[in-house]
Structure formats: structure tokens, C-alpha cells
Length: 568
Image (cartoon, rainbow, N blue to C red):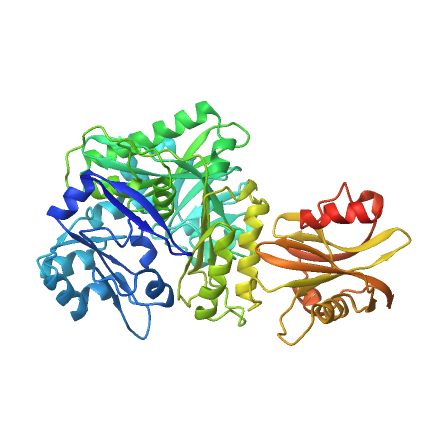
């Protein structure tokens, strides 16, 4: 028997085959209780025997609304997993569908008690074991002889911290990467920790300079299945303001950065950690984060995720898109079979060579696009090869928009490629309520065989662009948009030529570039560009010689090619 699941939504899609899992779910249906619906989307919501209970939202209704195997609960705020479990609607839904087996993203002792009180079987391994493994200080002790895989470290009280002239990483036992990892660069940083946390234990590690990688693995009985390695996208603005916050994964870049020997060493680390977890009674998924020391080429284990890692749904989607299955399976399928105590029978995980995801965190700009319009814009953005999953979180640094694609998005560590800049453009449009997909109009201003451009440093990428902006006003002509934008950005009054504008297409929107016949004033940065101008997002007006157009990174590329032909 083969069960095929396909969803042709423009925002999310699935293409997966299951064999053993179909039989298992028919025999033992399960309900995934998810604070965020995306966590449960490792399988299509159309999968027989697979039920989902989550918070209602604009995205949830569009993705799975109306399906009888999905319960979306309305409330004044987004409910935590334990709160969803306590709701009467949940209990009635489970009873009606004769479901006694529960799965959650991350287990807690409170969730365990709720399930026990209701006589539900919780598939997740124990919360106590997960805590021992994940916590920074207890986790180092749990590793035992594998502690040598970690960077050189020690456990000290805050009051005993001393500055030795070298950068160090400080972590607290109950902190997660992003908000509890602190880079101490000087004596002032040491003194701040000493004053704030004198009697608190802190794990102090040697600072390692290099990229971080992560992968999702499965403990299935005595077998450890090793998942695909991705480059971990961390601390990239404007997606987050936290320098150590994980915001995405790039499976393509990991293949480029790691040598064959380093990939083997990585798998060896994952297998060692998985083996120790198996002995402790773990089953199902776990993830590891590994750092590459740029100086020595050595790999260091820096974190273990004793739970379903956040990248599981994206990896499983990418794996499901592979056409040749031949008994191979996604990481989420293997996770479920292992948790359901199905005997391992030689299955392996699907290998992927490409794909990425990146998450825009809640930034509280005060100008965010409303949720219903985010969904509308997401439909447009998805046409350029992206799968979009919006959230309705409101607290700073919570997930707001998850963007997934079948192609790599990183040119190098910390630097987006052209495809990744599509996600950046979409994020910036949602952060500032600049509707994505609107037509763009700009002005080509020239004098003395030079063209007026913006030299940009845009969140890690350097390039040039022609001054201009979106046609935000519905009653405004494109020519009026071009004139207004040039005046707002550079304080120039312009008379446009009567010649036809250059038309190009970029990020699924049409862009029109008008030629200036004459202008008045001197270029001076003003308007929103002046307000936004910063070290991470700079706008520098510059006159560029026509002959240098071939040498510079002028975007979009299609405009550059046309300008080179015209401005000879």
C-alpha cells in the first residue's frame, strides 16, 4: 500500500509517499498538538490517521481550515501546547476520533501530567531526560566521556569570572541559543556578569571563530539515522536583532563549506551523541549544532536539541520533493515510526543537495503589514519559488514569517545570494507595510557620461541601485511615482524624457526606469532613506562612470544589461 499526499496551495505544498507509516497510522492514529501549526507540517494535513490540534490563525485557516482531522482553536491569544491540551474542545475532538496517542513538539513535565491525567499515551521521550541533555551545564555533565567533543570550557560562579584578554562565550544552564548566549569581548563584559549574576553558575567556553552547522537525526531502536547537514543562519539583520539567534538553514552552503573528511567527522559526532541517547532510552528525533573552527578546521559540538528540531518540517518538505524514494523516507516519517515503536527494517533518510529556510522575527517596527495582507503578499512572493508560513506572534524575537525554498539562499557565511535577497525584500516590505509586488518606478539621471546611483551596503551585501521606489499610491502614475521618489530620496526635482522607460521584471514585479531630461538641485540623501541609513543598511549617492557599469554589482541584473547597451 502506498499513500500519496499532495497539496497544491500556492503557499505550502506537499508531495510525499509513505508505505510503512500509512499502515502504522491506520492502526494507531495520532494527534499532533502544536502551538504553531508549522511544527506539525512534516506530513501533509491530508494524511489518513494523522490529526492536528493547533491555534486558529489566518495562515492556519488557509492551510488546513475545514479539514475534519484538524482542530483549530479560537482564543484571545496564541495558546501554549499545554493550554491546547487542557481545552475541552481538544478532549472532545480526541474522544470523537478515538485518539489516545499524542505527539508534541517539545515535551515538559506539565504536558506529561496532563496526558497522564487524561490517560493519553504521550509519544515524546521524557522531559527529564530532554532537560538533562539540552541544558548547558547539566548537558556537559550528561555527555560524560563525550564532553571532549565540546569546545574547551569550564563551569564557574559569576563572581569568579576573570578577564584573561581573550574573548569567551558565557551560557546559563536554562538559556537557549539566541537570548542566553553572551559573547564577552572585554573586561567590562566580565564585570557586568559578575555584578548581575555573582552566585549563578555559568558555562564559560573558548570563543571559536567559524560557521555553525546543524542536522536532524533519528534514534530508531539501536539504529542512528544521520540527517542532512545545513549551514545555520544566525544573527542576520533585519531578520533578528540577537547576534546568536538561529533564524534559518541552508543545505546547499553546508555542502560547499565542509570537506568530505569534515562531513565524515560530523556524522561521527552525530552517531556518538545518538548512541548515548539510545542507551538512555531516547527515541525519535534529536539535533546537534556543530561549529567549524576556521583556524584549525576542527569540528566542535556546541549544542544538542533533545526534541524535534525546528527545521524538521522544512527538511521533510524538501525530502518529499525528491522524486526517487525507493524505500527512503523523510526525517519526520522516520521520527514517527521510531516513536510508534515500529521495528527498524533497514530504511534510510532521503538525501537533499539544496534548499533553505529563513525566519523573520517580530521586530515591532510599528509599521508591520496586517496579517491578512501578509497572506495576500505571501501568495505573490511564493510565485518566485518560496513557501511562506506566517505566524501571529506579537512578542519581540518570536517567529513572525517563515520562508522556505528549494534553492540555497546564502552566498557565503552571513551573506545572502540573489535568491536570498528575495526573502530580504519580502521581509522589509512586511516590516514597513510596503506592499510586496507593487510596481516600482525609478529615474535614470545622467551627466558628463556618469549615472546617479545609490551605493548600498544592505545587511551584508554590497551593490548599486537606481533611485526609485514602489507605486504605493493607487491613483499615481508610474511617471509621478518616479518623480516623487527621486525628490523624496535625493531632494531633486526632475523633468522626465518622453522616451519609453526601461521595463524589467524582478521578484515577480514589474519595474519601470524613466530617463531624466533635466533636473534641479544637488543629490542629498533625505526622506525615509535618510531615516533608515545605518551601518547595516546604507544609502550613498554616487556618480558612476558609464564605463564602470560592467564592473559594479548593479541590481537588478536585467536592468544593468540594458543600461550597458544604452549608455555606451
